[in-house]
Length: 165
Image 1: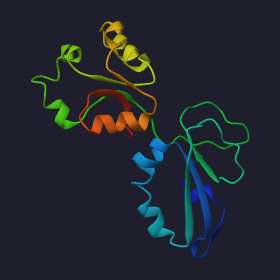
Image 2: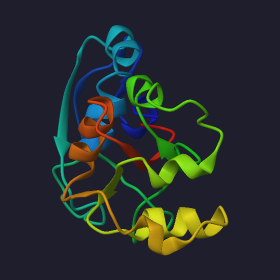
Image 3: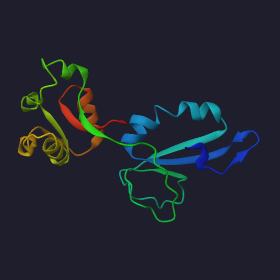
């Protein structure tokens, strides 16, 4: 995807610079872990990654490629879906080990729920799972998804997160 986003193709391969904008979570949790093949194939490209929490802002003329979240059309941009994103409860293996039967949704009453800003994600998930949405209104609320991911990895609780990151 990155290789096709630039028009600087020569007989020898890509050269020049490429500036990519992505959310901090995507840049940290996926892009940084998956760019080595691109760099190995295109050693003459100077790659810059800019992270921004402003996912809808795709107006910076200094940036060659924007990786954002959502499906809404963007004026004057060609868009290409990268992933089908699914949301599900996520926790670390260490946290999972605290429970005898993780297939029993009743354990969620004992678990620490981790939230991004408010209780909406867990309320929606519980409603879809046949559980009482009001049971989601407890746990820890964080202001940034990167902090939620760190808390999950540290075994602090269970969060609703996407399967890509």
